[in-house]
Image (tube, rainbow, N blue to C red; front, side):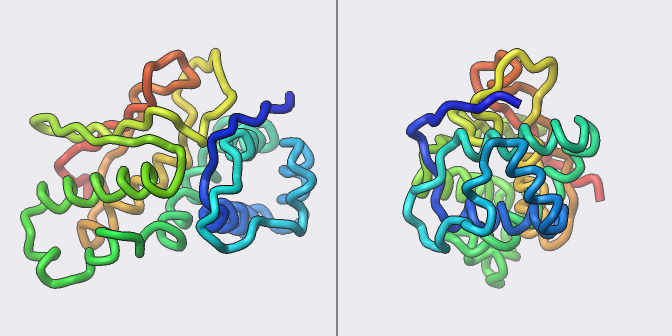
Length: 211
């Protein structure tokens, strides 16, 4: 696996630390050491970022972590691990920021489902845009929402992919929608990916829940 050059774009240390801890729980410490070595991130072994909001984790490091999962466990295995990690990362790192902190409030629960989803997705986009260099936005269509990532840490440094590869971001959105809707599951598909030649990473979210 080639080294992904530093980008100069960063994520908050706390988000990076929780992501690394989550992946380690899925892989075991020994498996995590193998992953970090393969991804040329050996300096992170036993040395995760501090749990603060300082922007100190480069997009290249997150991109290498996700690419390493696919290299080590194959596309299918890496995808499954990234999806599971993304859901846990949202639950542990992102669910209590800003507007998302109020999703358990009775006033929010009484909102129509469509409005809940829109408010929640806009809040997630704002959190990423405010706390990191990962710029995000939301568009609403008749039967779906588009969650757009204009500069994405998850697939940073990758190009020429034949299919979208941002499975960790899919997991984050799946868990976010589950929390926002009080337990419903929604279909989330990455229809366009920067790593596969897209202009953005575009995640399509159906307004109707699947369960």
